[in-house]
Image: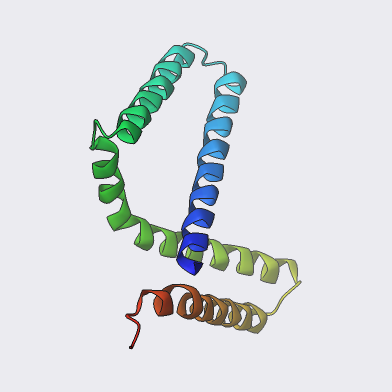
Length: 132
């Protein structure tokens, strides 16, 4: 059950992020007055819908191959991005005078321990074989 929750939470988060990126790109198209790109983006969106339909019908494995190619690099990219963002935000608060560096380090340690505990409880133990 915990794996299902983690899986579906990841799906919802990724769909939300994809929608936000698409909305931001659409807003940029209108803001920067590059409306000639609109037909190309329209065609790209329709191709993605067709690919998704073929994947769900079981007639194409292109989506599966794209997912496998992206999965290899996703974990490292997310780790690097989260560390960089956490460092930048922490140093921003230090520059504002709202934190000491030790506060940021302790916060990072607490966050890592919470994530490690959640991983242990939800993912690792669920994937271990059950002893009879």
